[in-house]
Amino acid sequence: MAAQEEAELCFPHLNNSCRRITSSLSKTVLLNTLLSFVALITAILNLLIIISISHFRNLHTTTNLLLLSLAVSDFLVGFVLMPGEIFRNTACWFLGDIMCSLYSYLVCQIVSGSIGSIVLISFDRYVAICHPLHYVTRITLRRVKCCIGMCWLSAGFYSIFYMKDELIQPGRRKSCFGDCTLVISYVTGTVDLILSFIFPVSIIILLYIKVFIVALSQARAMRSHITAFTLHRSVNLAQKRSELKAARTLGVLIVVYLMCYCPYYSYSLVEINVTSTAYAPFLIFLFYFNSCLNPLIYALLYPWFRKAIKLIVTLQILQPGSCEVNIL
Image (tube, rainbow, N blue to C red; front, top):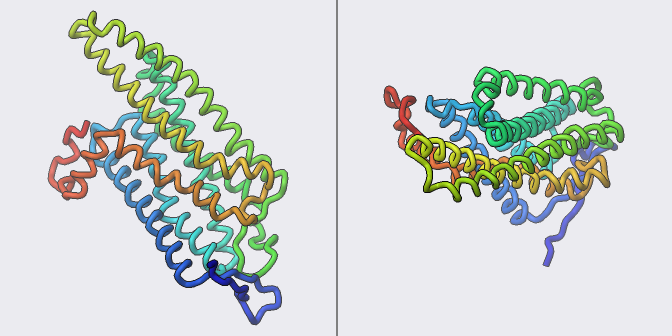
């Protein structure tokens, strides 16, 4: 039997107070405990990735720097956005309009940075698989650092554009006191749908179609000529296998990303203001759940991550010279 729900005023002394729906105590505690656990796991796992790539010197590769950028955004999702979403959906917003606008800005900034990192990862794998002879000269550590910096800077400027009305006058469009729901115009919502979903997803899919075709042809070539390789060529063969494995792993990353992001943006095709609908909590948490799945993919498919976790948990990284340990 469903628990009875009743409407309560957030601010009983105000005429324009929002009404909140309060579920039974057991239902609320169970849901909040589950979501809080997911948020905690998301923050911890991504923090382990950040420590691993930052600490161990031989993990300072171009691809891993891009993974580091993605891990930072995923960590912020688990540390800031998930708890904020839990609070926003289970309690009245008592922090005021300015904090609501700031929270909404952080949501846009972090999500935009995450999407930009995914696009950069896709381009990195495209060059590595489709143009391997030019990879070392085109994808350098300095260029990757510049691209990551530009990615987050662009995300910041885009967030200002997306949130300009709320940043200028916080709470201007809220319908009642005690609510923190971002209401955007049709034009802004359409632009966000194109720039945050249709455009990057189109780039990602096109790049990975090319990567998939080239990877298949390389895999067939390796199987048919494996016995003919000399020792020198065997080194190249191992390197190609490593690149193909990385492409496959990051391909899984992209598929999971699309599975988590598509429902939210697909629904926004019907309703621009998704956050104001009844389906918003589920769609947003599915959106954020991608940040929890990413490190699990690394743990399953990257041996270096499992080895790094062991060294971090056992505090061996505190020993002198631990950053020089061969983690690969």
